[in-house]
Image: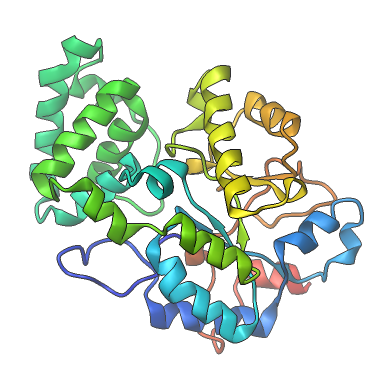
Length: 317
């Protein structure tokens, strides 16, 4: 599972990304120990899992960033490998910067995370009565989870603006912070950040795989039936426009969030697979096909000469 694949770019050098050299090194490690297969191979192996090599590996890229077209696509083509790319509809089709990305770039723009956290808390308390939300102190107490990638202050900012606050309030605060800390020209920023529909079509024509990643990159499990249906139907329309065959529809859940309602809606619409962010090796013989796990880029080394990780040892037996 990959997201940003880019070298540091001022003024947003703090964006967490797999840099290009390390990406190539990780592909070397994967080439040494795994067999990269196409998503269509996985779809064909649903009924006969043994048809896949025991060390089969699929490369997935979330969020539809422009570097997936400019950097990742040529790197994969040099190796004659397929990547699977999962853009969100609002960013690709309407040139909206997703709230999740607004938060990331606000964080990357803040030289003092404590000051940013103070500003976020002030905005929460300033607007909470209007939206019927708890105060910042209550939200802090509610956040009990831990992250293997983020310190507590950053995790609080992310979770408050991604999930803990009412949906309309979250979007309002993300817009305000993005304008304060990043830019007021959202459309121009989106043009630089995301692939276009034409580029997705070119990737699909180059034998890359394109799947769904929600319309607005929301936590699907937090939405009701009709809201989830709208998110999924928007994905289906985008996939149809790109030229994805109905039998090859795959959903990659934003934030890894899904519910039984999500899976039922996907089955009703002919989707074949669902990808989560649960960290584990996928096994088509035992795993639910709509809740397949993935490893993160941080779970494998970035050099072919690196010692085997436990994940790789499990694959190689």
